[in-house]
Length: 207
Image (tube, rainbow, N blue to C red; front, side, top):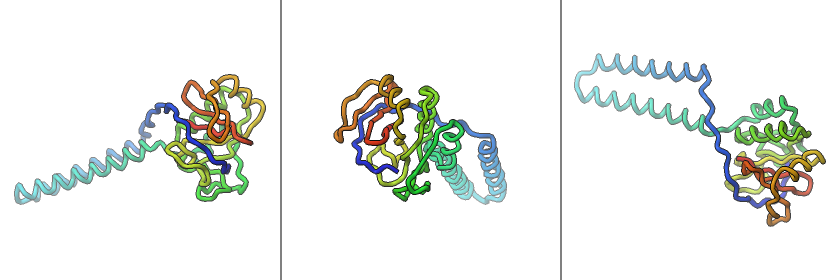
């Protein structure tokens, strides 16, 4: 992965929509709710007092609420595993390289896509389609990059290698936005994505 120090620009995030439920997950949630209903009905039938019924009702509702909160947090996170992200980029012809030939995000020499934002992958795929250029990812979510709320580690940033095709596409289609503190030239897309040209790669901040 790339280890150059970065300063985070202020950008406008891309709004994304949470993914729709897939059929197996819908079935699982319905099954849990149905079983909870049957269990509560059976226990109600054996309850001896209003106090018993109130206690059971509170317990069942608490369990269902906890399940719902777990599910919402998981769906809203919008994160991908390395294998999920790699499958998407490789099918689009986007490469990925690492000096350590590994994908462990806790190792600096690896290039990892573990816990990358889904919208980050959406955007790199859009860049590939729009530019028609060869794209190779050289930096992902692995440790060793600068921190911040929109960083490599948080899943918002990718590094891609330089080549004449992608260099020309970025500089001709996106507005020049000045220089960062480290001297890197920045270009801002209409989407709000920021492309900073570092020594041997583009450091891109997405969504």
